[in-house]
Length: 128
Image (cartoon, rainbow, N blue to C red; front, side, top):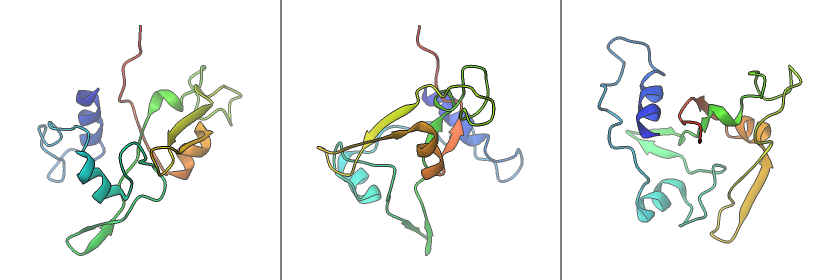
């Protein structure tokens, strides 16, 4: 849901002069293949959230942020990552690009979120 994603990303900054304009993220979409490869270092269908290239932006290095949907880290009883309240992460395991179109990487959801230092945001709508 790009509208929710845009709103959540804007919400990362407090209201005031540093807050991004409401239309700042209005054109969110997947990057074209060449742009994705230049930004991530990975080719088509091989993009992995691990080992992303550092981007040079005005002389400073910044990493590509990984946004994780809140629904995959919230337990059935509303807690986080299943470690403190005995809840169950849904799903417990996720698959992602492994660096090449023929490689896939699977890991426990809680380890994935910690490993990529994911920004957890409420960006999806439940399926019926």
